[in-house]
Length: 73
Image (cartoon, rainbow, N blue to C red; front, side, top):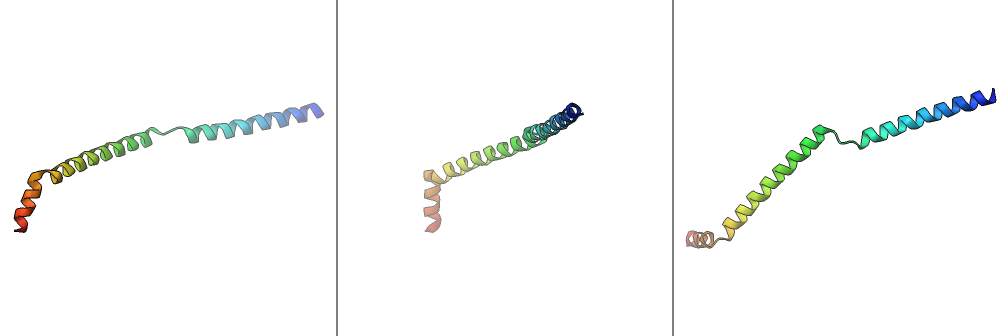
């Protein structure tokens, strides 16, 4: 009787550990939908950075300064 009780406790322990490990692995995996969303966000950020670079280049050009001086007269 003592041996069967140890066996039952051992089986219950193994099943509980397996369930915890399965939940942990499931939580750690990245879902494909989230990955696509992250890639889209990164693409948008890259586009915005490029637009900011263009705007900075336009503002720092000499013609912009000249135009603003003419407009101020």
